[in-house]
Length: 361
Image 1 (spheres, helix red, strand yellow):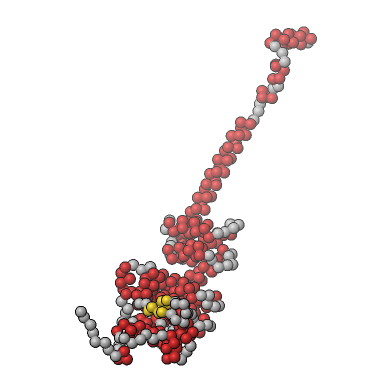
Image 2: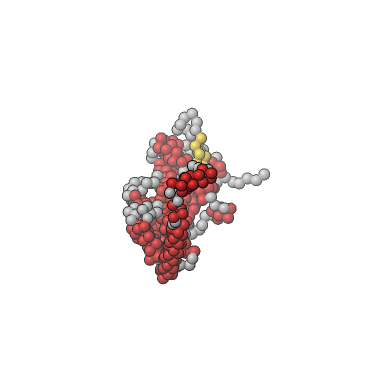
């Protein structure tokens, strides 16, 4: 049998996971933190001593709030996934089960990121150089100023999950909210902003410096889109499919804008121009190694000469055909002879008729 001398509850140490301070300190109110820590301390002490459990009435008196407000605090912590409420007949007389917040955080992070086993193992180890809580507090303050409203606890957790999943700097998250507001004039939703962050992550953007480089490239591409659309007489923004086509010309084919605009100049001969038509032209040039304007013009010259040569050959063939037809169509006197009379008489009747005519002479 093994046992340990029970300590004085007042002098006991209470273990609180460090992740609690990083996740919940920035998003919980003072009263919510007090209620949680007092309840957590009571749950820990009751395991190691004979001290009677603290209840909501005692916590309410210690914090200086009502029992209803204590219950509201517990509902907040349940929503955060830190506890589970077990209800009795009396709503105020509830039992609180404290959950393993570290384990819950790791599971949620893995579920959101869909990461592999190696990433899961890394997620279980909370980094020692983790960003301190003050940076999160400052980030949330800036986001709320940009949004013009307070963030809900769930929104704060969603932002934190994105930071953990994508290894973002907090200032990059603030930049995403600024972009969202710039795009539509207001913050549609935190999920919309997280979508922006995901697109940046997909483009290997994790710092403000990388974002600035990406924005410069994007700005240059948009300028080229506008030039192409203007040359085609399109006065609208390109669709994603159209941007993909133009990106292929610019980034994959490495075509100069001079060549692209030259191809687009052929739209004058088309009643209803579309990008797919010009894509076929530019793709053909690319496949044939026409990567400079000189090569394109030379190819066009050869094509025009070939077209003229074919036209001359066709004209000569047509003229020869007409001459042959005219020769076959000429008639002599024999052709003009009306043979219809022979069809009216037999040979004997014709001979008799000829003799009769001769006698009359």
